Length: 378
Image 1 (cartoon, helix red, strand yellow):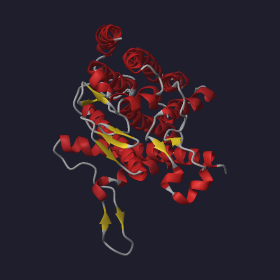
Image 2: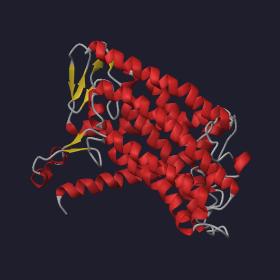
Image 3: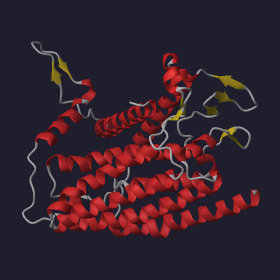
C-alpha cells in the first residue's frame, strides 16, 4: 500500500466514522434538546444492564439511538403491491449517497505532514504533505451543488415509484422546494466567490485566517453577514426540516415521499436527514466561520493583530484544527435543532412565497451590492 493511498484510506475512514456517528448522535441530541426546551427529562428509558447485577447504564438516553438502529435493521421490509421496483430501490440510496459524498470536498483540517507528526515515518513519506481533505479539487463548490442536485432525484423517485398519492404529493413538494431554495444558496455563494476569487473550499478557508478591517477575523460572515443568514436558511430548507418540512408533513402526508418505505430503507432516509444537518453545518463553517481555524490561526500557529506571532508545533496545530472544526460543526448542528423546535411549520404557499418573493430578491440585492463593492475596491 503506497503512502498516498494510506493517507486517503485514513481520511475516508475518518469521514465515514464522523458522519455516521454524528447521524446517530444527533438523533439523541434532537430528543434531549427538545426535552430541555420543554422542561422535561427526555429520552432516558433505554438502558443496558450489567450482567448478574441490578446496575442499569442509562447514560442520559444515548442507548435510544442504538435501539432505533437495531429496530430498523431487524424490521421486516414491507413493499407496496404496485410499485416500480428499480426506482423504489434506488430512491433511498440516491437520497443518502450524495449527502455523504459532499463531505469529500470539505476540508476538515489544514496541511498534514506525516513525517513531521511521526518522525519514524519520515523516510516512508519522503517529506510529502497532504491537505486534510479527501478530494482536494479546485472546483469544490461546484461539486457540492452537483451532488446536492442528485439528492432531489432520490426524493422524487421514492415518491413516484411508491404508487401512493401521499408519496407522490410529497415528492412534488420536495422537488419544488429543493430547487427553489438551492437557487437561493447558489446566488448567496456567488458573493463569496467574488470576494475570495475561487471555488476551492480549502483556499477559501485559508483566506479566512487573516484579518478584516485590521482587527476582525477575515471570516466569511464578516464580509457577507446577509449572505451567511440566507445560506443557513436555505440550507435548512434544503434539508426539509421544520419549518420547511412540507415534503414530509406528518399531519398531512403521513411521512411524505417515503411513506411506503420500512426497515432500513426508511432508516436511510432518516439517517440522510441527520447527516445532512452535519453537512450543512460543515459547509457553513467552511464558508462563513473560518473553517478549521480559530481566529487569526494558520498552519504555523497564530498571527495576532499587531503582528505578534504565536508559533505552535505541527502536532498541536493538527489537533487544534480537527477539534475546532468538530466543535464548530456541533454548535451549528445544535442551532439547527434549536430552530426545528422553535418555529411552526409554513403552509405550502407560504414556503414557496418565502423563497421566491423574499429570499431570492434579498440574495440578488446582496449579490449586486457585493459586485459593486468588489468593483469599487478593485
